[in-house]
Image 1 (cartoon, rainbow, N blue to C red):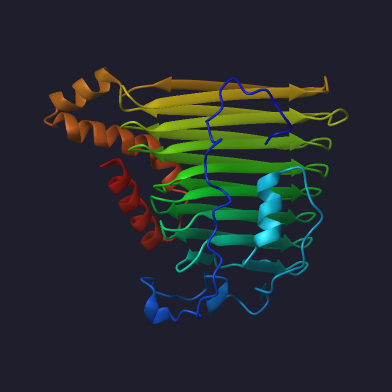
Image 2 (cartoon, rainbow, N blue to C red):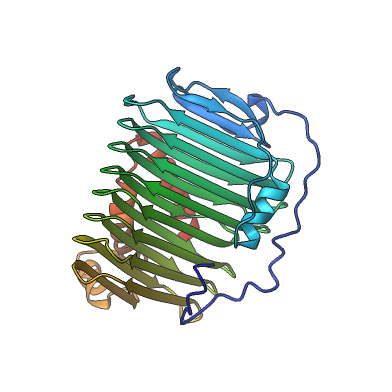
Length: 361
């Protein structure tokens, strides 16, 4: 799924039922049917229909289904185009900075979510988005998200995946950043399902920047395969990948970090870091870092580590009166704190922390 790159390890997804999609027609939900408290600067989409929209008027919000796009060399993206039953398109006009963050909630309630999110930031605009994907465990999901960041535009986006156990999820994100555009992304994979997640960013304009942070927690029998790729196409572009993961019980978690610098992308910088914390002897944590360099006048680097809880840290905290469980919880909280702190909405941060703590047990 990443240009036939020969990964050192691949999650076995051969028998995952990606094509088992329930696409029945369902009545439009009302807010009273949902366990979601609506608020200002929020868009809520349920089973393909917008049921709440209080985004600023300067932001163009649409939910009409498009015709099929040109096929691509990815069977799961083609499947999304063929079976799509939900779309959310957000456009921010030229030179329009949106001051307040917008919350987007996409819900699969009564059927499979075959969804596309499109965000277009025209030149000189700015947008801060928190998007939350919530899924019913009875239904598989296929989600494709595309982001276009125009010249001198800035997109900050926090994505939370909260899909229920019993489903299989494919989520593909793809961003293009123009001249001096900035993309700042944090992904929270705290779902309970088996999942393939891809986040790709192409720095196509001179001076473009991309920072992508991803945190995943895999537990029980869960399997997650996560690929984050940045590609420096133009000169003086900067990209950073930071992947943190926690795996426990009998779960499997694989991170594939791919940094590519194309020929003629002079004076560019591509960095990546992957840290995995394994809390169980029967869990499997895998880190696959790759750098693909076609240009000499660049800076690049990668780091990866897989470890367990530091016994010295635990001993120190226990010597200060904590139980072993309390000490472990504090260490794990500190491990994830840099990610959680990027959420500025305190209520949303509180909800996210509660979900993380429930996931960790």
